[in-house]
Length: 346
Image (cartoon, rainbow, N blue to C red; front, side):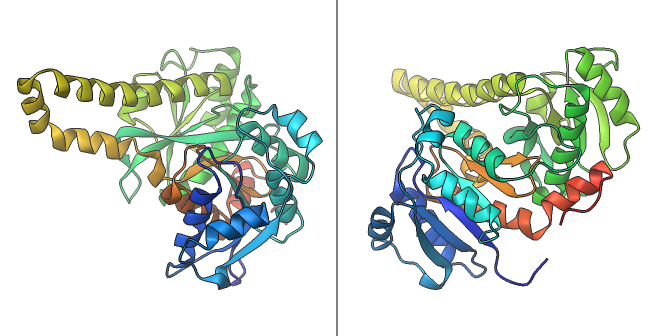
């Protein structure tokens, strides 16, 4: 890779919390020892006003004006067609033109996916892009002991063929190697049984292909109960199933927190008991804190795309930019292409 600073086009307008939080994350990163050059894309007046309230190094931040943005409640295709100069589309064009190396957005998920599809090329051998997401697990992963594993797809592709599931496995494996520094991430298909013959035709077909695919540390099928245990590092499934599972995991964490809060307010004995368990509850909260991971990668394109959570705070935005820069630095697209046995990405 080039020794030049990595440049990230950041959609500054799409977050649930507005421009201030996104700008604060970029400003915080500009003050770090190894900053990333960030192009803040959106309403220049609002971005400038937000910057005026932050401490930042101007050498690492640049404002790029864009007209309008896609709100969380908008229909993505209609909004992008009506606002061709909106922030997420402008950010994607900057990456496509080589003026930035990666796209980061906390905006409308559909708009991010469509903008990537409109402006970037799919990698040779990849028929469908996949949106991956991290989730908390009991086991630790990789040499750094990450409390997260990776699941894909979680919404970009509703139904998949066996070939597409194989592509997801290769992409998820490459991403886990890069971000978690895990040389041999364990990869599995999510199914209704561990036997090779269990699951849909697509799962059975993908299982047969993955068993003989070099470069993927394939561990067969896993069931739903294996997900929170962290039996493997990468779980592969169709987007419809993955999205349902991901929302369920988020819901369980919120329910546990709400139950603990409610119990503490009802009885003194329960409050005392929760006090004894406080270290464990804090550990659970830390495990489920997606803010420390930054964002979810959209895999399958020749450019790096990171979709940050719509409710991202400044810390999460900063981490999403850092994840994007790490993926560029370690040649994510090239690693995926090599895993598929195809020609190098140029």
